[in-house]
Amino acid sequence: MKNDKLKNQYRINEQIRVREVRIVGDNGSTVVPTRDALNMAREQGVDLVEISPNANPPVCRLIDYSKFLYQQKKRQKEMKAKQVKVEVKEIRFGPQTDEHDYQFKLKHAREFLEEGNKVRAYVFFRGRSILFKEQGEVLLLRFANDLEEVGKVEGMPSLEGKKMFLYLAPKKAGAQKKSQQARDREAAEAEAKEAKKVQAEPKVADTETPANGGLLANAKISADALKKLTETED
Image (cartoon, rainbow, N blue to C red; front, side, top):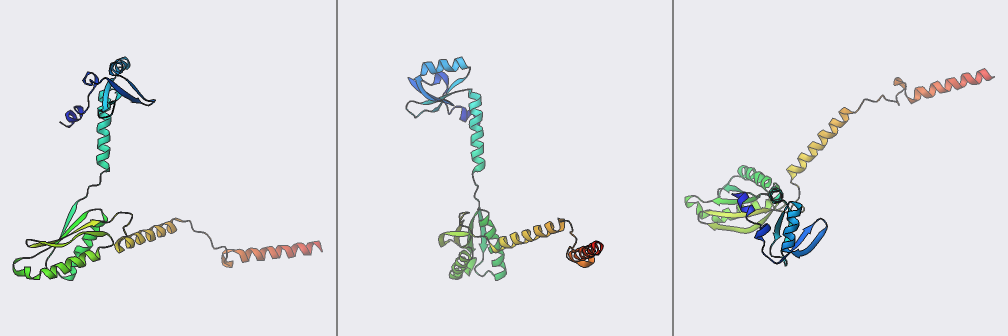
């Protein structure tokens, strides 16, 4: 189905019924009567493919149609692969969430934002807990404040039924600050790498210790040799 849709997107050869077309290629472009363009395609054993029908005159290429469709399909696949898929991750709180649970969810929300995902945090009010909606709003505002380094608020907390929502979007990569967790991880990796590098270096003898025949020992030998030479000359 996808190939049929792509194939029907372009007019080729006799389907092109305008008076003249612009032929584009590696050597530039030229405007010629459509009949001449069709003759050129036949002589080269290719097709006349209309790639820009809204131009004046329409723009065409002389190319094998199957090859052209393959190129278009490949280009679409590459563009799709480059698109960043943004997911919306949910974080749920209760109106009286304890500190340990709050920190646990804060950590996950930070990771989601650093990965480029959006976060939808909400407080769920069960039964009479709706009386604590102000407490839920305070919790969400604190949540947004604790994530201000990596996320931006897309709207103030709003109550929808029994849930109060807060939406956070990741900040641009260029403006993002690294989290403490990320900094600690990078520091640990750098330290491990340096330690591994030191272990891999060959052991070098101490040239400054007399016991190992270092510089002082060499100096003593040279002095003795000079003294002996002097005595011989005398």
